[in-house]
Image (tube, rainbow, N blue to C red; front, top):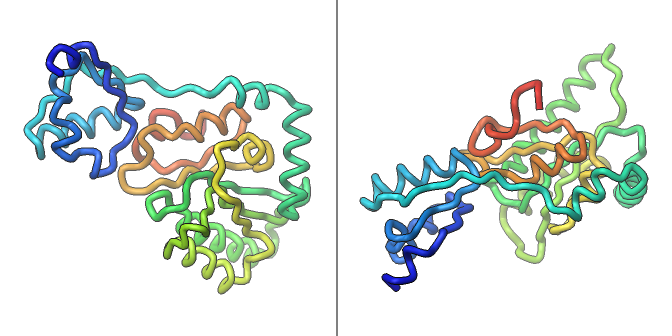
Length: 231
């Protein structure tokens, strides 16, 4: 092990607590370097390993993620995007002229789907109360559902939708690695991760490749991608 460690470049892409267990990171000071996908994540690792574990991080390189060739081929093909948009919207019951907000992340409390749905509901109330405000029908889609896991959080989300009578305009889609069809279908991406935010948030740059506006929380790697009113 001592001979191998100086040749290792350690890739880090998480900020969750269990990644900092001493047994997992005890060799970290002895590797050639650490590659991390955002300055926010790098700073968090530097502080947490020092303050809680007494470990010094190796030389760190921040390397932002990029988009896959497969996704970019779709993003740059107007015909393909239109076909996917029509297919997904038809499957959801969303018309072309409707506005579709999307949040694409595994469903969990830290990703903020609950706040997304509550904000969506509140916006509908404001529109209804402002009689002079005319906007197209709005829909919301949560991509990342996994009811097979029977999580309490997703049950809460679905119960909220039923209680507020939003079933016709709020849609749940199973989690998938193939996000291009949904990026083609939505009009706005919401990146709503809470607390420390995303380590980087690849879905944000994927949405930008599709020329979508992005609403992001001011935390984590999102702040290195989204410049208010600019990107």
